[in-house]
Image (tube, rainbow over all chains, first blue to last red; front, side, top):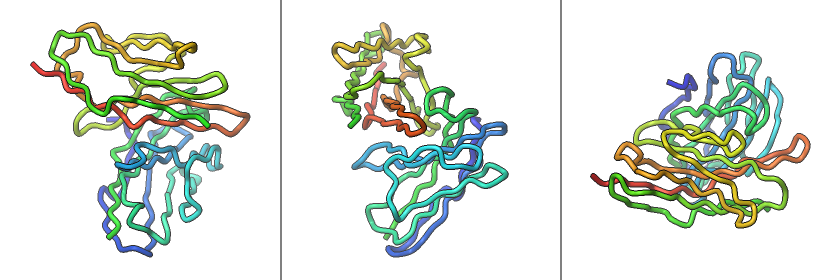
Amino acid sequence: DSGVTQTPKHLITATGQRVTLRCSPRSGDLSVYWYQQSLDQGLQFLIQYYNGEERAKGNILERFSAQQFPDLHSELNLSSLELGDSALYFCASSVGGGAWDYEQYFGPGTRLTVT
Amino acid sequence: AQRVTQPEKLLSVFKGAPVELKCNYSYSGSPELFWYVQYSRQRLQLLLRHISRESIKGFTADLNKGETSFHLKKPFAQEEDSAMYYCALGRSGGSNYKLTFGKGTLLTVNP
């Protein structure tokens, strides 16, 4: 078990709504990464936090935001949801701050369905 | 812009046969390349990275800058290699970097 946990496992919500996905990194890891996996776009890097601060941004929409708390868990907030936001959202963690300096350990993902 | 292309969505081979999963990239700088694997009902995990030049589970991948490729190879495929494989490219620029994934290749190794 990689130790990265994500809640909830599944989330079904309606268009226009707002949801929060939660991620707890492995013990000792300071970085948290968020990814979106959809059939259309494949696996896309959204954003990274390192020790509480935003470190890198990928293809994250303006309607999405994230933060990392002092206990290092992270939340991804998705608002004004659209049908196209339906996807599997992964969280990963690593010890250090670089995307490839350290191995990223992935969580099981949260499956979001927007109806 | 950086891009990763995995031309094969599906790849099917027989056990014991050689396997090559193709990955091509476009990037103007010095690339950092990775292969990730996701076995059925398991999490995505790092398989190997080009900077370490290691062989994991019999897989190797060589970075060919001339052909901008990072193909994943194994001389004798095993049934347990059946999984989804993603090639990924890392780019840095000060504190701004991205990790871009290909769309993946589903490898099926038949008995």
